[in-house]
Length: 186
Image (cartoon, rainbow, N blue to C red; front, side, top):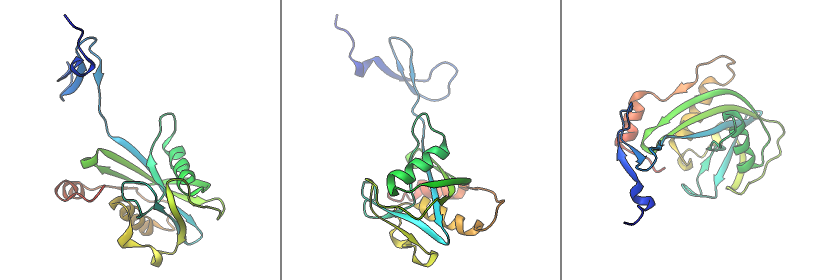
């Protein structure tokens, strides 16, 4: 009799004590949990301007975004936001308070967005950006922003600008339901 291949060792089943179907190894019982990805980023400012990056990579190449990306293992969310600013804009930032938490269930992501200040106005495109610039509120390219979360973060940032104490924005249930019905390009 031949050994089972990797493809058929894993079976979809509801493990004991669980309520969802998971991939379970038929040999050893190991359970694969496929959980949401965490995105970390920051609305970065220098004086009265916002730092934006033009994406050099998919998805949404050529569109503008704030520095953000996948959190890596072994780092805090704040460290991840600072790393993303450096990778995308070669920017050294001081990460401040949490600005927003966005749930994006259609692509299984949770976004943690912080307020941040550039430590100095030196920046340039990193390998994931074709252009990086500081813009005033009136110069934000609203029609060319890469993702809905960029819109949300910038709008929320403006609503709490200058306030030391504020409540982070959390995606309201009606917005989550709307995203499920009318997905925006990821």
